[in-house]
Each structure stands twice: as C-alpha cells, then as structure tokens.
Image (cartoon, rainbow, N blue to C red; front, side, top):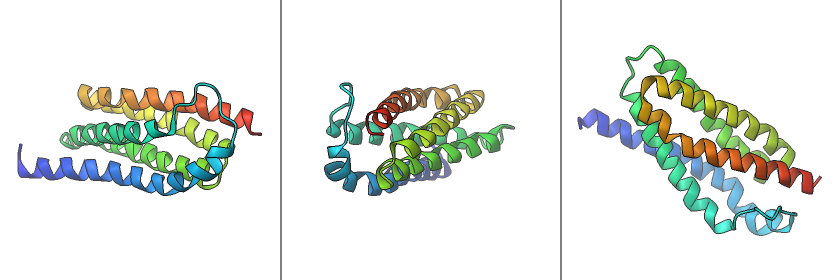
Length: 158
C-alpha cells in the first residue's frame, strides 16, 4: 500500500469515527435520563449493544469510503462522495434530533431520509467498487431495524 493510500485509509476511518463521536455527544447524556424513562417496544435491544454495533458500522463505513476514494478517477466518484457525506451528516443529525431534542418524531423524519441516502450511497458505491458497496449493507440493515424501532418509539410515546 502506498503512503497516500494509507493516509486516505486513516482519514476515512477518522472521519467516520468523528461522526460517531459527535452523535454520542447527544446520545450518551440522554440514555440514563430521558431515554430510560420512555416506553419501549419489546424488541428494543439492551443499551450496551449500541456502542459496539455503531463503532463497527463506522469502521465498515470508513473502509468503504477508502475503497471509493482510491478510485477518485471514476466518473461517479463525485456523486458517490456527495451521497456518502449526506448520509454521514444525516446520521449525526439523527442523534441530535432523537436524543438531543428528545424527539422520536424528528428522529423518524431524519432516519427515513438517512435510509434513502444510505441506499443511494450503496448503489453508487457498488458502481465504483463492489466491496465498497457491500461493506455498507450491514449499515443499511441496522438502520432499517433502527427505523422500525424509532417508529415504534414515536408511536408509544406520542
């Protein structure tokens, strides 16, 4: 691996982990307070599972971004990066809406947009690198589950 590729890999991983860290600034304080008190559906995972899942997903996202970044000469590169950045911003905004504003409704609106942005990102990444697109499938699956959970939380707590 060339030195420039190593820098791209590290930058990609750091960018995604920073997004996770920013989201956690809204999430962590709300877990023992507000989130603890709201009604939850029976399929709500235990709180401890969210951190390792998200750290792993951000790791996969970073590797995926790196694989696309290595193909910066691809005609769909700019579109792919745009979709990736949009979904990453929506990812952070979800934490702010759901936990920061304590609004399952605003979280639901955001996560629906996030889910669509993830699918567009996967579709575009697949055209550049099959591995890059494939690495985002667990993310799409988890956000699909999170969307159902978010919807249920909104219904139970309106």
